[in-house]
Structure formats: C-alpha cells, structure tokens
Length: 148
Image (cartoon, rainbow, N blue to C red; front, side):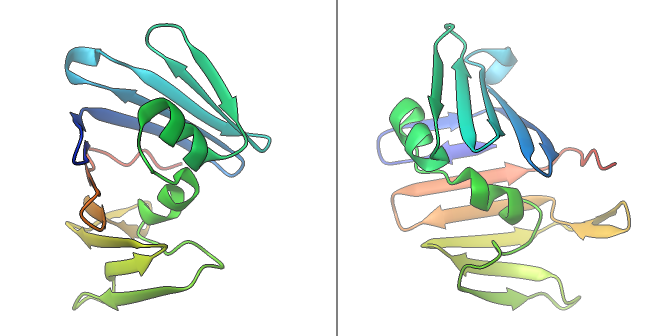
C-alpha cells in the first residue's frame, strides 16, 4: 500500500484481519519498520504505535487524523477494499465490461478498481486507487485475499 499527501508519503504493508464487529490492521514500513496496529471493536478504535504509545477514540477518522495525520475512514475502507460501496451512503459508480465495480464516488472519495480475481466464489479487486481531491492518494495492491 502507499499513501501520499502534500506533506508526507508512506509505503509499506497492510495486513488486515476482518470480522463482522472486529477489525485488526497492521501497518508496517519497509522491512517491518514503523509498525502500527489498529483495532476496531465494541464501538472504539485503538491504535498502538511502534514506540509503545496507545491511543483510543470512538471515531476512526479522528484517531487516524490525530495520530497519523491522515483522513482515512476505516469504516469506508472495509467496504471499499472489498469492491463495495459503503451501505446507507449516497454514491455514484461505474462498471467494467464484466459488470464489476470499476469506479466509485462516495463521501468525497473517487476510487478506481481493477485486476479482479475470483476468491472464495467472489470477484475481488487486486488493485484499488482512492483519491480525495488533490490532498490524499491511497493505493493498495493485494498480494493475497485470505478468505474464510
């Protein structure tokens, strides 16, 4: 994954363990340096940094902005990385020639999808590029989907 803002850029690895009411994300830089763990459960978001700091908030966006300086909505990412619009929120979308989501505009984000592959009976994107204006660019290339 990579994240770019006018002030900073970051590239590294994102490992995501997703369950219905519990998400754990591990962000790490090259060679595992700069790791941060984010966990969503029971209406709270917890963030642990590599230097041992622990942060808790009810708002994922507020926590990400405060600690990492990024406006990344974890709630939206759960759906967006799976090639789905966030439920209950207005969106515009377009499809590829196979009827899969090719692009999505939602909550000020423009998200493009490609490199679909069949995983667990479902077509999932292999590359996601999300942009919020000129201020934030988030890219994910999926190495593997660990579906259960």
